Length: 161
Image (cartoon, rainbow, N blue to C red; front, side, top):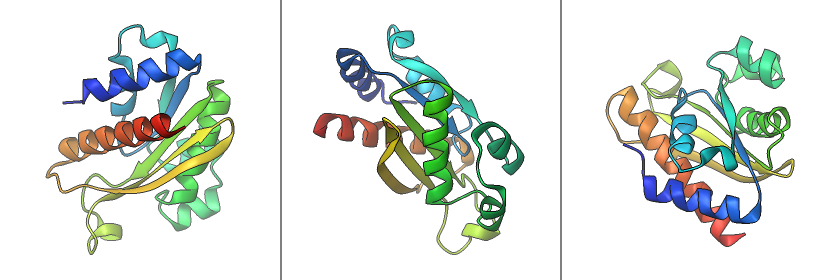
């Protein structure tokens, strides 16, 4: 399901650097948290995460600005960036990952298909912003695909840093 080689490579780099990561997810519904937890000794680098599936919870737990979030149905680069920044503050981690988007076709994405925004923060600064798409069918397959994409994006960035 998840690319464990990528997960373990992420873990090795972060542990070697003495750093930590936390995640704020919406569209992936906890899959990122599950993926990070698969690495041996995950507690050495994974601080935890939060799944915030609607506007109310994003606003309450991650201080997402509600008026803007309502305008974009909580799916925008800015929302993802704010999620990444806030989760790293709440969990006291070096890295924060935020992801929000669509795993099934809804009116907002009928024309272009499912998509999500992922942002990665490091030391309170956004360092990666990506718009993800998936050709998978079914929401579970899309969620897993997004999870694997985010893990690969994170690994690529860590290796270049």
